[in-house]
Image (cartoon, rainbow, N blue to C red; front, top):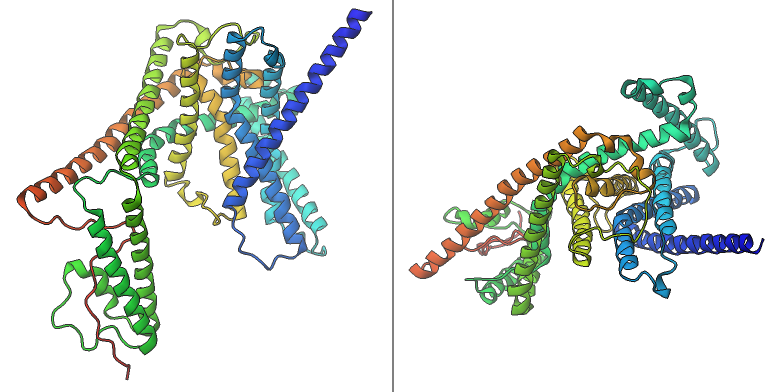
Length: 524
């Protein structure tokens, strides 16, 4: 009796400890997602009434919870890999006794359950709730909007379940019976999630190679590039003169309310004065608006050049090349691991290489990599790299570039759409990492029981599609960038050797050479 009581007491304490850890971890993710949504969401409507404000607040809460779930799914594999290595290297340590297989297994199960809840319930409800106005004939109130959203959501749920039943009957005729029709929780919801995960992995396969190329541009925008054969101080002085000239012209045009050039110039402006030519025919408000826009671009160009002037030589000449080398190395390692995984699958080492998990999980038995801790760390870095490149590739594509979030400029509808996209991609990340052979850690819980993960043809097709698409994108994108950079450097070198002044580089702000001097006069 005492042993039974001790076992029950130990199980109770273990359960309490696990739920406390899950609660603290969830609160941390919710705080992070709330800060991110607060940074992105646009607040430009001050005429909200109480009902609209309540609807907006509830929708934001639902998006915050869903985004926190997506963060948790991104951390599924990294936390599991770190836990396995910690238990393998410190099996008898008192400080890691709380870390066990039950905790990690529960983490995976909770993430699977919450991702289904967010994807099929919370986010659709938030979108419908935000768009609802209440049925006609009802008094406009929060309750009327809740009733409309609930009814529309119920009808949409029946429609989706009917389409799921039809699709499952085509794919698996043995399951198309009246008994399985009632198995919503045990069959149809996992089947819906498997379909969503299938599309999510396909999106990752297509978007990640695009992100490989575009990430170089994104990093280049944040880091200062080395300034070879370029006098930044001289460019800054010229830009300041242009800015002062535009500011004086704007002030003069505002004071006199005249035309830009009276009389017109003796000769038409050259091609270098294209921006000045666009302002020649403007008058009054149009002229002031055009000069203000040109002044804004000139000020942005001056700020950019001033940043280049005050950046240390170490940061210019070391940080940027190191970042580019790291990106190239990570991309090369990812593609090489995918090619190695294709070879392993083709050689046919058995179904154990497929992501479908049929074995009992035991944490801390063996290392996941032949390189030990270094190999596990590299796997974690590559997993995060895949996630970052997938989002970069997604938002640089033509289809999803319109919903790309912007700081303080993202509407609530776009916040909901981006939360759904983040949830789909993060749900597919563990599957993609296992499919491509980035990690050997088995998918736990219901993630490893998705049926199409045991299909050899689908897994092989995903690997081949990723390898081919990544190779083609990299060869086209990086080769074109290298050729352009080589041409620019050779052109600058030849101009410097021959003593010719190289053509001025077009600034990021769009400011060009100085405008012709105006003679502003009064209008008739």
